[in-house]
Length: 620
Image (tube, rainbow, N blue to C red; front, side, top):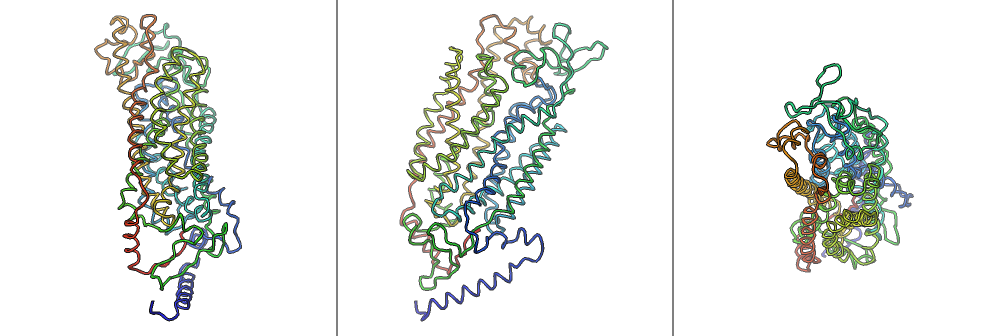
């Protein structure tokens, strides 16, 4: 306040800073020219912000593909047996786990690398992500080929998740810079690419696996052979006298396949689902798209004026001893900017994170088993309708809900506000999950298509809420903490998503496993021990071993049960839906406790910030 010419000093400091930055950041080589700090900023004459949506969208489209992992997970549970799971094939829980790992690594990476992303810039971050994500597919494909779970988890799960974490927030932050007046729309459109990834991945998996698949050796009808269980494997003798491991394929197993095969015995290890080749091809494709997108994405030049917002200035306000946070046009909604470290000191951050966890856990759980769940629950009640093709379309429907939720709810949040949008999410989700077991029972008892379509619509709406949470969350965080540090803050918030990506599927699969074992034990009471031993080559006392080796399943027990025995498969997920409804109740409570930052909190953070002079340089 004692300085006689503040404006002159500001101009001098600004000129000095620009001169130093120009010297220090001048590109020295091709890598620096392509991915250096200066490459992240557009020219002073470029102001078409709508062109920046494309590279941001395509980046998210690539990294959003894991939402349809159940398409690949369903395939690799039969990689050795092909028509049915062999004892050495991976279980559904093992095959679904990459979805949890990839999103878990995503959140951890986004949290730990948020500051590096801001320093390195969007180009370098996304280019590095392209190498990780594409490389994760290649290593994961090798893991499937070698039948190595650690390699699949380390490649597709961890390395692929690192790629997602590195490329998730930079496009959002960049579009926030281009669309300061439409933050909800900007984040919604970009994150919609994340939702559309599954719409591309699903038909890709179908097309590529069908192209590369190799049909297994058909031994013949079950009645033509005598089978026996040796070391937990179902064995049969070929006409040549050779003893081979086989899997038994019935009508229920055939309904889950997209190939015209016969019922009977198939030799294990003689076919291939084509999953390995499909992973390799997609890895190369995703790498190419993400690398190209990184070269096109740029932030606006500081001199560019956007939507009546003045150009971002590089100044030091010595008179007020703090950097100007926003212009007067947006002052009403953006009066402060809280750093990521300060945001994590507020209860609002953790209450909002708990809400985010609960909403995400439900959708993640549904996505992790979408295709096998559809076949398990409804194929017996409506065999002519619920085929492998229908189950794949169900995955597409959920993906469409995810995409539509990201777009639609983002636009709605701009109209009614982020808090009101989340209030609807939490209150509506409770009855939604509670109603699913009743809808399933209606399908089973009526055997009509209408309640099945109601189930599809309900689960799609549930997934749209999860998608809406992802797209609205960055803007919600900007409302609470200010937009300047939203990239780093959202990276920390994604830790709650990481927990949900692990907790949601694990909860669903664990409760399903408990229900499945209980259903098998109930069915076993209706089967005579002699029939059981004749069918499976082992006494009922070995039921746990036979279950673990996948020789005994619900469908195979039903085949030897008395006529009129009720199929328990449709109700395997009832307890899961009840548990998810309870999670939504928790989300309702935690979100009701979220309030805007109090003036006391704001003053506390401002006081800490005013203790030093801040140079406000627009973030990339």
